[in-house]
Image 1 (tube, rainbow, N blue to C red):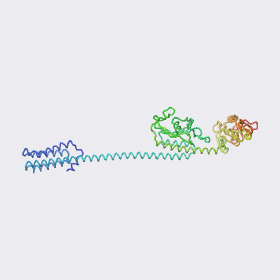
Image 2: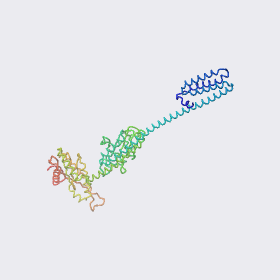
Image 3: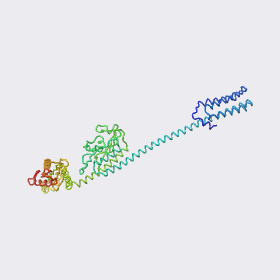
Image 4: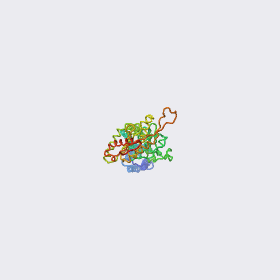
Amino acid sequence: MTNALVRLDENFRIDRLVPTLGLLAVSATSLIVAPIFAAGSEIAALSLFALTGVFFIHQFGIRGGPLAVGFLITATLVAVIGIPMARGLTLAVGGIVVAGFMAFYSTWIQDIHTGRDHRRSVAGDLETAVRMSHEGEEEFVQKTEKHEKRLQTWTSLVGVVHECSSTLKFDQLAEAVLATVEALFPEDRASLWLSAAPPRADARSAAVVRPASQPASQGRRYQRRTYDLLVPCPDGLDLVAGQSRQNILVVDRDKDSRFQSAESRFSGRSALVCPLIEEGNIYGNLRVVSEQPERFDHDDMVILSHIASVFSMSASNVRLYERTEELALTDGQTGLYKRYYYEKRFSEECKRALRKSNNLSVILVDIDLFKRVNDTYGHSVGDRVLQAVGRVIREVDWGGPLPCRWGGEEFLVALPDATRPQAKARAEDIAGKIKAIAFQGEPAEGAPKGGPAPTFRVTVSVGVASFPADTGDPEQLFQISDRRLYRAKNTGRDQVVDHD
């Protein structure tokens, strides 16, 4: 019966149970008390007890029936056995029945509460298990996304290392680096700034080294799709990075004390900056800027610093390659192209001029009496003269000139798309600038120590030839200019000749 009571309907109500059990207790007591006061009242009490059992079944269903059946059996026993005996025995039996009923009632209620607590515990455990399952699933998804992002990051780093190691041009190098940064930070603005001045006296690349103490000069700001735009540099973000000479993570510009002054402001709310440093000098920086605050964290800074390191190493390789190429193609003393490279490029220009019917002019320059300079002032002074002449010729203002040291003290300049009058004007400009230079010689032997060193100037003779004004074959321009050069030398030197 106890097990049956434990399996009572889970939706039972205490407010139904309490009055029903109270009614059962009253009817059971009446079985004992009624015979004491009136003979024959046992039948009425038994009827009341039976009706109470029916009411119990009505309230709690058939599964609550065993309790009522138990009381009916007890009442029958009391009526059949207890009534004929003495009143005292009837009272004793009734008391025992009531006490047993109360004990059974307490156990039954306890079993009901125990079962309910057990069900609640099971339901709570199930709910906890479901919640933990969902939390575990979310944590698994987060870890999976984090691992995927990490894999993408390292894949991108491997890719940029491969791209940077396979290029020897700064523009291609910048494009590869910015493409990687843009892929890792697609919602932000990435840029790469390189200073405009050469990093060292012997390097001629676009990337430069500039001491941090010097004011920033104009530079090239590489950006995706507009990376060849020349812009003034730097803004406040570049200045702070240059002063600190360290990687900078800006969580929120408006809350960062380093960016509160007018000169240190920059466009954006958060940023990452990695200065590019070589041999202790800053020659640019790689940065990412966002309009949102708290956009970047330490992990993002580590990623960008790795990319900046890759770029710096690749940039060093590019500069080394350019320097090696420069030494192979140019004359170390004057900085002009060597003769074999000039002949190759000049042949290409001749073909282009013939194919497109473009103008092409040649200027042949020879230093007058150069042997006398060496004999009088020494070869070291003669070398300074060659260097100065080479510097003037390198500065020829014309689109795509080909300046070359032809040999000894002779220099050759090809001017694509230049007519003969234009070429003559450039030749006269060259001759005038060279003639204006005052050279300082070595003191003569026997001169007082500490006395002034002698100064002198040099002149040049120039021959000019043009296609198609002078010939229908541009390959003959050198022979024509050479002939006119010797005419200039034989008729007094220090002049430009452009006709026979």
